[in-house]
Amino acid sequence: MSAALAAGARAEAPAASNNLAAFGFTKLLVVDLERSAAFYKAVCGLEEARRIDAEIGGRKLTEIIFQPAAPGAATFVLLAFVGAEKPAADEVILGFRTPDLDAFLARTREAGGSIHQEPHTLAEMKLRVAFVKDLEGHLIEVVQPL
Image (cartoon, rainbow, N blue to C red):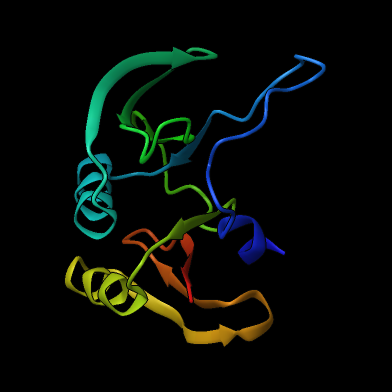
């Protein structure tokens, strides 16, 4: 099911009829903020929008907020708590769409990431899918529409 969601036609969501909430961003907890930012910039082409130093429950942190990939798309944020030990690498699976899965995998290797599961085709969904890991072991599902 996650591949189907990741392959959705647009990141734009219809207006909520109940106005309760709308998904707007994902924050990925990392230890090495600069190294992680370089990885996502190199592999996914993300562009840094701004940085924020803040606190959550008295814990100091720094965030890097990236530009949304398209109008209406959710925002991706890297967050590092000052002095924190390595967070779990399986707390979330990030999903990225790409027009060229093989090029994405090459960029992953070049940036120091690894291939977790080689590409395979989901014919019924008209997708090629692979899983990679970033520098800290976070799992990323990558889909290419066919």
